[in-house]
Length: 218
Ligand code: TZP
Ligand code: MG
Image 1 (cartoon, helix red, strand yellow):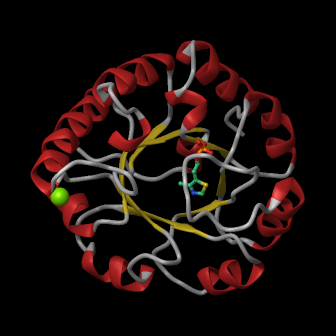
Image 2 (cartoon, helix red, strand yellow):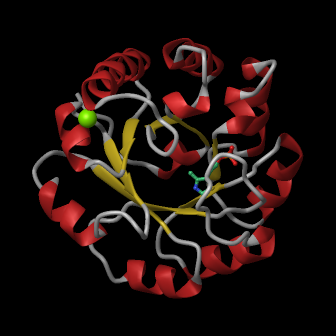
């Protein structure tokens, strides 16, 4: 059974790949994050990842199984073949990745939801015309250490501008700290997508609960 999309899934959205937990096992970090109550997980194994294709598939299978057992949606970043192989619930694509319309065509019939990164008004305007998108990811809200080729910081003001124009629910991403959460919610985001807040946390349970407290189901 795959998880169907609903905006509440965006509340506490954990993103990670092997490159985000050097010297550690992502399975263990995900176990803690799931136990703490994340509402979605995106497998984003890229950039400085040292995994081979076979290792990525292996790791992905385990992470996928963990999410399934917790009834939390499992989303794959920017790799349709991997998403299909892992029977992901969703796929997320960036502006520089495969064209979102091609991705939507390829996953037809696979019951997968679609997220698209948008950081400008023009990108949101274009996305609004595309049938098959379920949510947008927007940022970076603040400077990030987790993505070397990140777009310029848009801030909470930029986020609010995108929220006002978007036909889709938006999850905010990039440099998000616990302190930044109230302003992000105020700007109209449905949730926060985070890497380092959780991969570098000394208390994952506390930090996931902090996110969930700010983004309550509307
Ligand atoms: N896309 C825009 S910023 C970013 C991604 C994947 C990285 C987010 O990581 P962090 O550690 O939460 O800033
Ligand atoms: Mg692979």
